[in-house]
Image 1 (cartoon, rainbow, N blue to C red):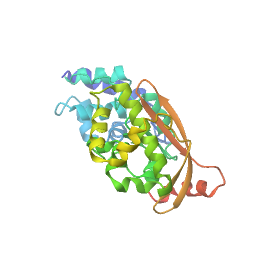
Image 2: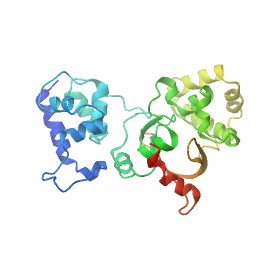
Image 3: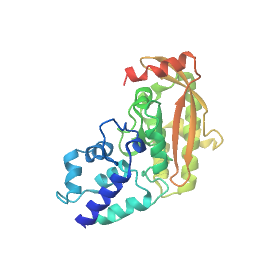
Length: 273
């Protein structure tokens, strides 16, 4: 671990970011450019004291999960993330298509959508980041661990995961989630995490076996869908999708027709977070 270079790198990256780059208000009392240490800590999901000690060349060697969180908080590119890991004395993460490192450009867009339901998903349907309105609309899907992080896995193994959609739409979502999984499975191969999910679902779910046997890869996206919200009732939303092919990730943005009942319900999400 090169404490001096690590501290210098974090400081320069922090000072290069402006509050508006990460969705924060500048405020009238801010006299210097760049982010404050406590702001980077909050963006990275750690205490300000922990982050400050790294910049001050104190404290223990950061773990790989902590470094990944800092890389995300500072909106580092993949090259910058790898450099961060090397400075901290860790091997660089593999650049697999299923990488959880969100492209900085995608993160900047997400930061500007803090008043809108939006989230970033991996190719396996794992929620990597959500805005607060997205959590209010869909629930906190970043809390899952293991295979259950994948929406398609939960769809066939966790009955409560289906409550978010009206029952009449369940067959359609089964086809869509399964088609998305098959495309990922075909792209990543028999030794991938996608393959492990397929094998387990074939053992656990008769419904999955039936849908999987249809070999349908055409129904992979839905522009409009109905959400069965526990407090606001049914909400009709449109799904705008931005794809990052390099990372095999998608940014989903949920909107509704202005003036519609669903539009009014989306405006109420801030009250139910």
